[in-house]
Length: 117
Image 1 (cartoon, rainbow, N blue to C red):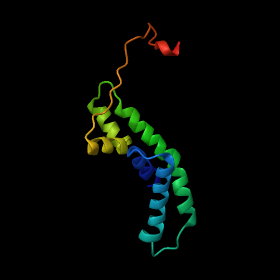
Image 2 (cartoon, rainbow, N blue to C red; image 1 turned 60 degrees about the horizontal axis):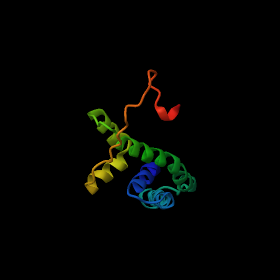
Image 3 (cartoon, one colour; image 1 turned 45 degrees about the vertical axis):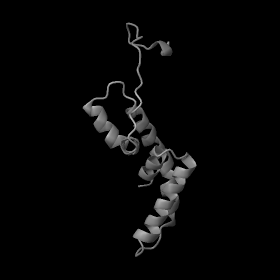
Image 4 (spheres, helix red, strand yellow; image 1 turned 180 degrees about the vertical axis):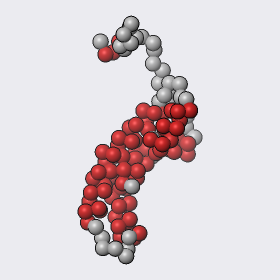
């Protein structure tokens, strides 16, 4: 849950520290409000936001990458909505078109791009 909250916060244009705060708040509320009949797990309150940063940032960056497909296909759209849900949802709610990155065909015979030579 922490990674999803972090990723959605980042997709909504928040800084990493703010997204960490949202993840901490979600974990805190989960432990104290939704699991009120159980003993509060301090470990969950601390570990969940800490692990949310690398996991949520990965899926946020993956969503940005999938959002810039030069020729989006059905498979790319499915991957974007399932792996980069925060970015896809943010674009749909904002009504903004996705940025398209056009890559020129400058590969040699071995399909090695010029910038890697």
